Length: 464
Ligand code: SF4
Image 1 (cartoon, rainbow, N blue to C red):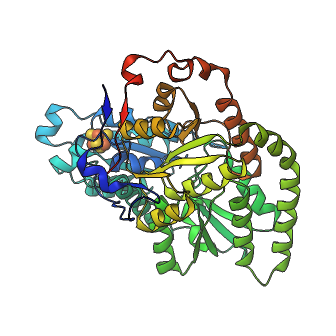
Image 2: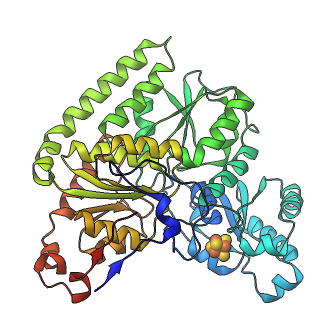
Image 3: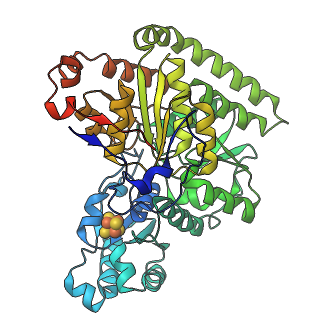
């Protein structure tokens, strides 16, 4: 008989709504040996800065770190695509013993000469933190010689959680902001932060704002340009989507430049509409912005609603598991799935904080399992226990779903279809419909009655 146990030290990061007091432990280092789904600090900074398309991204470390994050997001660019090249100093044994500052200097100068980037980001990896290269000094020297910003990203993989990587990326962006000209920026303007343009969403969202009369100065992390980031301090409002990654930068800009920020989500009809209304409310002297926002929402919802209703009839009653990076996305997904008549039986995130998990607890139905920093075994265990039909996650969750023989929707780096905005909600619904109603699942062992003995005899232990 096979059992799927939970590691004792992980029990405080798993909560079953309704059956136990809420005491979620989160924002801590991943448990050694637990094989967390969460990425390292370096990867955290890489995913945030990656979409700055006209910058050079040089990874100071062994080639494995670069390979791990090579072309990590499908972040689309409307122009240059320098971000899609992953450069590495390819540190070897000799560099570890004698130091690699000279190698870094040589790589930086050669790459800048060859590719003429508008700025360069230099990522420190674990080994650089151990050998103690003075990356900052090399960046300063090269920046002076080349006449472009060369920014160290202090992202040594071991020094915290993925969230510390987000913070390191924000610190690097903060060095660019405030160095550009702002005189021609409209008084009705925003920056979009934490939208990564994976499937072209940033363009759709920018177009929505343009239609209601709001200018977008910079989408820092989606189709990003160094020149736009430099003048981002001229915008009147920061609109933060991926709050887990970009809140530190929004807070810094509030303190330094007096720019307020709001948290939004562009996923699902309700949250997309709210993201437009919240921005409109920020400019009360221009009531026409709110009127245009209401008109836009009305016409977009009318356009997609009939098809959504048809899909809802097909997927209503299906059970979904969600495991995403930031908890804010999980909130939107729960609402979007409810609009399709589906039930969320598992919800988890890599980087949620205590407040996020309280919101998640309040949103979820009794019996829903809520997880922080989960591993494949835990996710598999609860997918079986909750008899989920669908798993929504990223690249690392896809094989779990397929091994469990259930539908999967990529809501992270690798997809090519926009899932944000009104159009995105329809794409999302279509994808859910296609995957959960696929005839292939009838051949999955647990549905066909041909499950191998190990699976038939799996015992689900209670989580506490
Ligand atoms: S920075 Fe460290 S933890 Fe991250 S990929 Fe490189 S070696 Fe691995």
